[in-house]
Image (cartoon, rainbow, N blue to C red; front, side, top):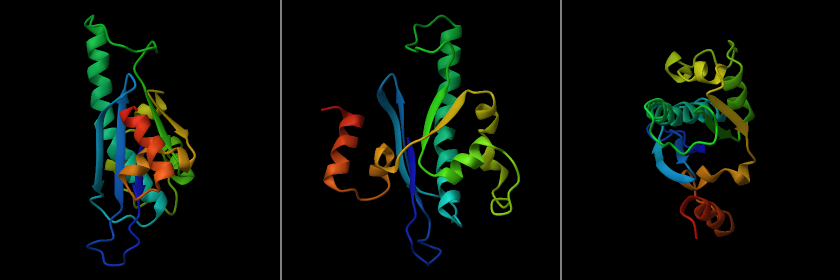
Length: 160
């Protein structure tokens, strides 16, 4: 799960969005982050895509490590025949950019460093799925959430 939150500020020094993500392995959170993005996003879609790219910078090395461990005979808990990542995104624009790599007038300024994961998506090693905003667990890392939303997400991350 990953998420961003736009600050809504006009001052460029504080107008950066907040990204947050949680990486689960075998049902347990192993990496989580909540931090300001390093660049100012021009739209919510761009902020979400930046967050998507940042979260996959943590995930892809873990995927490589697990694949290598499996190839060397370690008992690695994995139900799939190969290692892949399921990523959940609640912004349809960011989903479209990630799934269909083509030049678009409103996103042509995105730097190549954000597209590092597209080959993993093309090969099926990273699969991106839509998720309803109220089901996006990483929201609790990016903005204040009411208790009725916060508690179920906390339970999903930490257990009872």
